[in-house]
Length: 108
Image 1: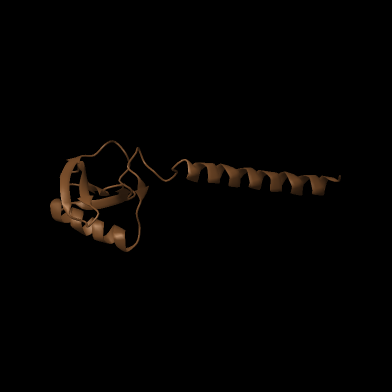
Image 2: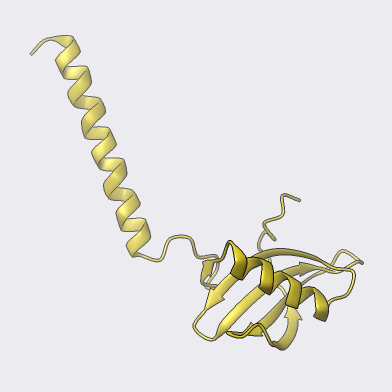
């Protein structure tokens, strides 16, 4: 085996290993943050953010998470504190609770 063939085989083996790690991560619930559930994007995210901001006027909505009974939206209040707004599956308000110490996903 020449050097070029060895390098190609090594790169291919590395790519396969990374793919297997990615599959294992996804199967183990990857994409979840501290038990929140999976992150939400698209129209469901926009609707949940709008509903959460009705509960926290003047706030900034961050990451939206889906769980078995609805959505959790991380919202930064005007005073800078972060809360978790809980919504049911129909985006109806359930509760505002202190947020645990994780990123709000808005880049700050």
